[in-house]
Length: 222
View 1: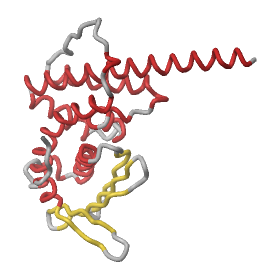
View 2 (view 1 turned 135 degrees about the vertical axis):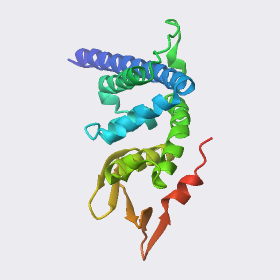
View 3 (view 1 turned 60 degrees about the vertical axis):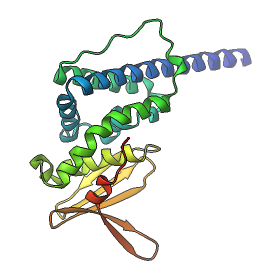
View 4 (view 1 turned 180 degrees about the vertical axis):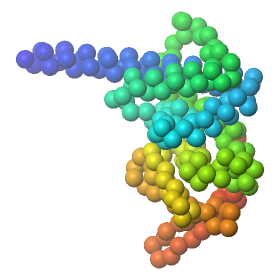
């Protein structure tokens, strides 16, 4: 019985290691694809991102894994995580017409660190999200007059800015409130007042506010 348990443990460890390796490989290839699309058709790549934002059937957690924090994928759901990366590749190819770049079949992806791959991903996405969010906050893109879309865009911004967690839910209401909930069940609150988005911070003894556009303009993305 003990021998069977040991063998079963070894099998599970090997499966997990193989899944991790395949996911790391898929993450890396997706990064190459994002980089190629960014260089060849940045407007198309931005359209991919906006399509995700406007499609409310795509959960925020899935968007986070594709765009912002792929290294935080659930290790117990690696096949789904791999599928999400391939879905992103398919959407990039469909919209930008930039194909998935080929890779050397003998390349050892085990030498790469997932956190480094995630950071490289964020570099490209930040270049697109910052101007998009500034334009949306300034009223330049009418599609983001829809507070639900704006709230989802802010959620992506939060993922890119604080990459140790990820947003799993955003909710907007008819009173101009945007509530963002992360994986650790921590909340951020935003309010639309007189055409401006304000972050509302509840401190121990008082409430403070900050104009979101000012924060985003000062956001260092390099």
